[in-house]
Amino acid sequence: MLDFLRQQGVSESILQDVEHFRNFYKLNEGMENRIPVPQYNYYGKEIWEQALSTLLAGENLLLVGPKATGKNVLAEGLSAAFRRPEWDISFYINTDAGSLIGTDTFENGKVTLRKGPILECAEQGGFGVLDEINMAKNESLAVLHATLDFRRIIDVPGYSRIVLDEATRFIGTMNYGYAGTREINEALASRFMIIQMPVIAEENLKKLTKDKYPDLVDDYNDQFAKLFSDIRRKCEGGEISTKALDLRGLLASIGMMKRGLPCVQALKLGIVNKCFDTYERQLVEDMITVRFPGDLGADKIFQ
Image (tube, rainbow, N blue to C red; front, top):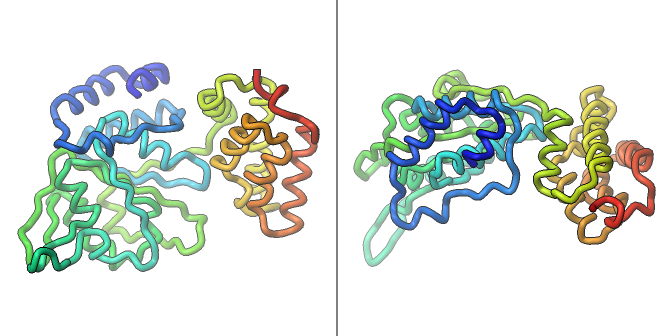
């Protein structure tokens, strides 16, 4: 990961600090399997430098942006860059303190605490990825205030106070466009440094697909990037919803093409069929058929 960041032109002084962090904070036994191995890399020098500097300074990070901007890819990449165990914590409307911190359970004839992901992450010096943090109710997240601010503690009722390991960091992600999301309150927002994630540029998208599929023919790689940009423009113009703007779907479709599925059929599964409105689905399908012939197969797409 550090070699990749050097290729991206990330400041050498920042990377040296990351290496020092890795060497200074040792992993606890059994935590190696929690260090993520990213399938995809995030491309964007400035965003990397901002994110790395935030975590090096001991702050928590909130990644805010629309769909397909690489929030989770960056969060996973940060855990890998710092070589810290990662806990993925998904938020939803019924998230409560018990699901985050822990709950009482009966074990060996006595009541014990079954630790939640926030508590485990805090004790192991991990990176906790708070996915779609604005899906949960603000009152549920209030239990994290002392964890995320300068106090860096977790008070579990009936148990001792837990002080966060010095290496612990929390990385939140949020998207205003999803159903069920809400504004986070000022008290929670003040506990994060916030990065507004930019839309992925065509050039960076081509690097991403080429990184995943090195034998992808450049002309078709360019066409996939342009297709994705066309769909984004339709979304920004209000002509279609963001359902078809699915970067994971595009990458998965290319993977199915490599397995032998014709291009148009693969894109239909990964992108077109994400639209449930007939007009919208037809519009996206037309955008695909303009760029790709119906009989296009893996023999032409890959070298």
